[in-house]
Length: 282
Image 1 (cartoon, rainbow, N blue to C red):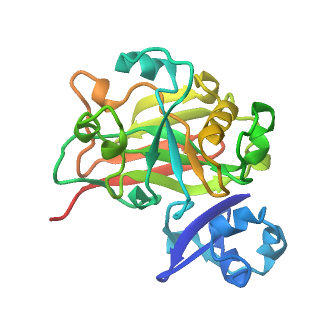
Image 2 (tube, rainbow, N blue to C red):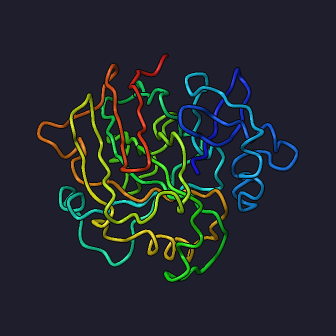
């Protein structure tokens, strides 16, 4: 099942993407679930049963929003591919490097990623987003994957000069409209095993990042185990699982995204996330 959050003629809804149409399940279940996060919290109960009665809307008529616009938290994993660790010169660590992104820094598929007026160092980071379905604390590796509701493409757009202002990543990771999330999430039963799936980031059609998920230093189960030790994971929470090597900041010369560029993050079987780059308007 592919699930997304969209706007239809100015109205926010959520539902199922089937082929080239959006099935407006949110309108059918409006009395039960306020949004996709609420439906995930309830285990998506009743969603499959109402698909047939939901209005089908061509995808060309929807405005894509972040898959989960209102997560309780977004936890991002840094330096989680060996090539990226090496290009940054960071030391080998025993535990995942975690930082936070705020919900209002996100944007949807086909919407602009915004280069802020205070910087020209806008970088791409293609990643896999993991959406939590079942809450928990101190989740074991063995139980971790049963807490996953689905997966999505993510571009953890980074303002590198602000990221370098401090040892903490937070300032450079939370400018408005820099974290692209979508177009949809896919449930684990549909996507199947993740390890050999390929992630690819393209800037203006040129491949700039490529890896398989088996190359992660800390796999998804370990990320869930670790994050759930220091915080209670809630349904609808998002773990952004790390970017491969090839980021623009570590190229010579650096490769920054600029207005007029188009960046794409594609994951085998899962989908394609595309965003144009625009300049912030004063």
